[in-house]
Length: 100
Picture (spheres, rainbow, N blue to C red):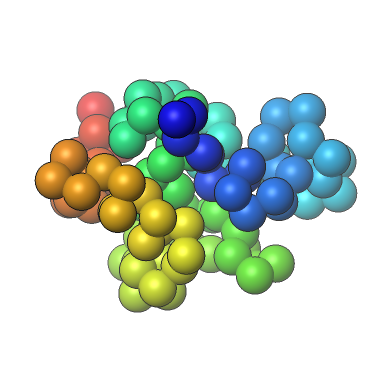
């Protein structure tokens, strides 16, 4: 089974070439290459909660510290956590990858 990226799951259309790219711009998670492959996703498509500036409910989210409590409740975050089970990478490890 192929794992969905956040833009596929949420159908936001903010990936490069997506239907809403011109209206809302490209989502930072869709182009964050330092997290490519994490949880089997493309770029940060399965680790969007650690990427600043992603959209949630139509609003741009800020830094990880400001958005994480909302992200933890997100249906996509919960899906990734369930799918990855014991292979789910903690956010602190993902944030380290962003600093590399």
